[in-house]
Length: 177
Image 1 (cartoon, rainbow, N blue to C red):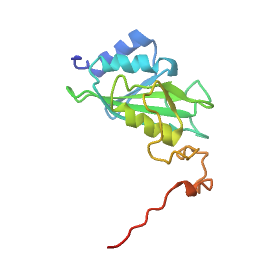
Image 2 (cartoon, rainbow, N blue to C red):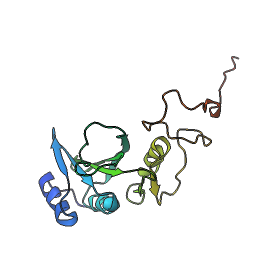
Image 3 (cartoon, rainbow, N blue to C red):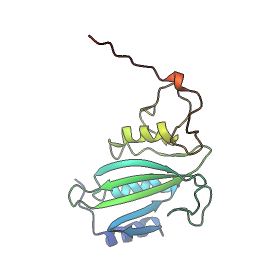
């Protein structure tokens, strides 16, 4: 059983010792860390082994045409997507947000299903709606949209009215008895 995570300052120091200088911030008691894309799995594995035994959520933000660079994009341009991993320790209720930035044309990060089984459907949802690939995922296929759907509708360059693909959605009719 992994041991409970240390205090936030100790955790950030341990991350800095292992991964070098990382961009971090604390806002209203919530700590955020930006993981380099190339070392994201290693960093998340480190945290899983340090007591962060619950993956609360995996989400994504599309920063297309964003006016000011969000945390993690300072000094670097062109990273369009920000993956957000929300971690928690069930032993201490400590929370940590890890952000990973990826870019087109083929945004890809390693799957964290080997670390947290809960990542299975969470990564499928991000793949389906944003088009972020999770390398090594055991079953990366559509979760929300029909299999025939070719686009990723939560990307900011996807038209609000769609691209005429409504024929891919079967219409369900109710029969009153």
